[in-house]
Amino acid sequence: GENVEQHPSTLSVQEGDSAVIKCTYSDSASNYFPWYKQELGKRPQLIIDIRSNVGEKKDQRIAVTLNKTAKHFSLHITETQPEDSAVYFCAAPKAAGNKLTFGGGTRVLVKP
Amino acid sequence: KAGVTQTPRYLIKTRGQQVTLSCSPISGHRSVSWYQQTPGQGLQFLFEYFSETQRNKGNFPGRFSGRQFSNSRSEMNVSTLELGDSALYLCASSLGSSGGVNEQFFGPGTRLTVL
Image (cartoon, rainbow over the protein chains, first blue to last red):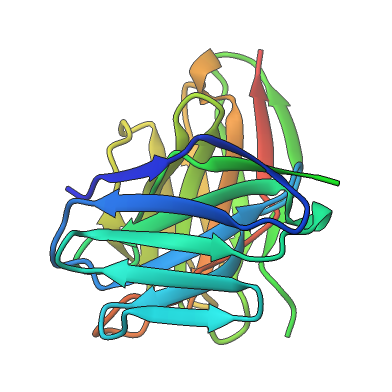
């Protein structure tokens, strides 16, 4: 089955700096890679996703890059703000269907 | 559109009891997936239902079961509760169309505590 590794597990950055979270996956047939943000006590929220036919996708201060050859994808947050503090999860699907395998999560702390 | 809703939001049960959780997906979405979230194991897939049929299943014991109704609402049931079943149970709603993976949107979760 799919295996997703996420690093780092915790990340502390100064407000205004950039944050990068990396994930690797094992199933070469995976073709969809979402990122979720979960604030304390709240539901995971889809913030950006990428499909395997593109290498990069941006949405304001957030970007995701995908390297299918190396089987890894990364989340980039620029100009971090205190409200970016949360746990971020990457995920990859089993080749068929909506079964998502999640990474272990990265706790991001943005220090003002 | 209304978002994904789950009931109840909180539950306290004792070992050996059973529990039923409910999830109403976004209108028009036909797929409902269930996940268990714990501090130790993270987010783990339980099962997915699409058009009233279980389409995918995770690695959980048979005590965990689910079903989906014709209006796409889904329930999951846990029988013979164990202390380790204490967790946040999340459902995720998606269009579920065939041919690929769809964006999944999570509900607020049901916090289950087993004493």
